[in-house]
Length: 414
Image (cartoon, rainbow, N blue to C red):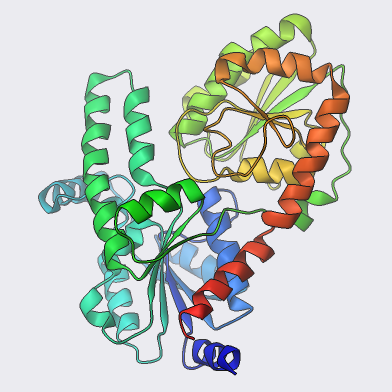
């Protein structure tokens, strides 16, 4: 009976759950979009779900409205970004003592008005804040006596900024990132204390948010659309191993990773495996990433309609990351596709993978040698891929994660 009452309360009225997020959750070409889309798709199969997001043109609004999302999508048309508007935003972030990166740059007055209207609706039960930047649309005084406010922390943003500060060669950029990290640390602490529940992508980050004073924290790791990858017919030529790296190529931790692979790892590998190649797959490559395509054996694809073909012939996914946060969706996609993964500890952070069983975990300085030795040991690569695939299906399928998260939410109504 308690189960039925909880489910009825979630599904009554205009919307059981409203999600505020910072961009159209489509196409599924970034980790943030994948998480938002699949989580909301799972919730929509259990309760009425609306996803509200900004768009920057009538054309983008039209495309979003015409797309058949598995949830109710509500685009909000906001002014386009311009250098002058961004300068004003940056100035206001300084005055308001909040970070510009990951937060104030996503502030839109019309999104704020829409959020206020939705929060005043009597039938709204769960307010889902997607990413830390959506916290700026939450006004606790408008939520008195209503359902819970949940903050999905896709990353520990303070850690990302701190790592980026360490990686900078420029003294000015290093100082700027440290300045932003300090402001983000204060913001994260305030945000997790003011909402009713926080979702972390790993237990390590969950414990961090608990130490900041969050009321409730639970872990919902990033996942993978297992069925979309698990049936690929893999065709790998051991004599011509193709190393792959998948990710958004306008994200600095990914840029640093592919530059290291192309300039440091691949040349060492080709000394012993001369036919080895590197495929850099991902949207929005910067000029520095595009330039890597001129190096021997390196291909830069840019945006691709699907990454599955690159998974089919990949011998290894190599991830020499030493900054960033969250769970690497590229790892889980490789696991589901049966592609062996060689990664740094940071690159595989948030995934319950055991070294030598599900993936090969090493420092990036050891990556070239690991690729050479593992390529010569196809049996070990095959065993790792088999164990990793089972792990992806049992623990990281989006359908499993979304249902578990919904069940946790529902307990708040019992």
